Length: 107
Image (cartoon, rainbow, N blue to C red):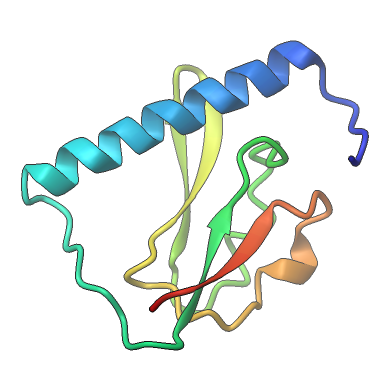
């Protein structure tokens, strides 16, 4: 496990933010507000490990598809990757010093 300068309180808050975001995605998906189309087999996309992500936003600017964005949630900044826009190019990965970007293959 990588040790960071963040406290346990920060990691608990990051986990709570992640769970809140998951609940919002489920709600909006069920409400039909989010397109849930699955990409072709073999496509890769990146996701954020919110237990590692400090919300610094360094990964936002290098994304050529503008798939990564920052949002304020409960007074904290969180980074979100839109899987429908992410092309899996990995341009964001070198900018993350916290290894918080995870490659996922769709099937």
